[in-house]
Length: 110
Image (cartoon, rainbow, N blue to C red; front, top):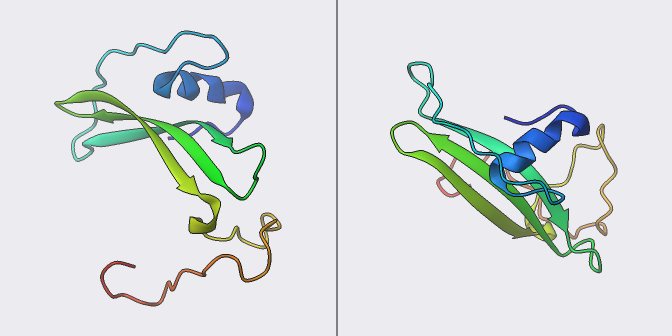
């Protein structure tokens, strides 16, 4: 789950980490509907300020039925990410820098 606007995104940020000095959000276990075992909440994200095409990190919170809450920090190199859709945003990466994902390839590992 993610917030549609920055004004309400602060709540999800606090689920995954402290944010702007505010304490972490402590939430009791959730009751999930039948058939849903996990809910992921996207928290804040950061980029290397010096190298905009370098390392990015995303904070995540996960609630897993029967187990409870977990918090993660996922870090990845910008080059590993797919290019954004041209209709949404311009890609600031140099031409040919990213490898396109072969979406028609159904082999394992893709």
